Length: 221
Image: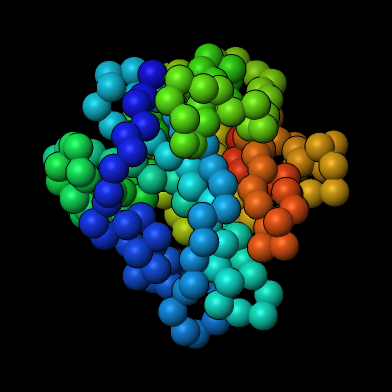
């Protein structure tokens, strides 16, 4: 299990994201700098114990209508070859030293563990407490094994999220702009064969649930 260190980060994750988020096609807040607050998320474990994996939810409160975003991140002790375009920034970790933070949609370790989560082979972990499952994260899957599905193609961003296509027509859809669902029955989109959903805190202090990730089979020939 991943160990959550209580230490300083320079710059902080929110400081990195304040500079990075406005460059994303799915960023929909105002023209000024984001005013970000941490709203939730969860972690996954790297079986090799080398890569930190975090699905962070941040809310931008800079506009009259706050917007919550899903930001999957990976933290590495050395640069990831070929992923310069996905680098969010570097941080100095008080225990681990220099860390390279990446948009996790471009990191094969995160993608592999996300597929394992959808299939139920691993369990979401609490964002802030070591060795503690996150019971608010739910998942489902209908179909055959995903372990050998190749999602190595370039992740495609649009105004709502990020899609990772596979040659066999399967596609992973990460919902970057989060929208609360009225109930759990409304979380799974039509024709989806799998999903991950979770909860986050709204600026008024209430909890919301929504769809984080959807898996679609055969969307492309």
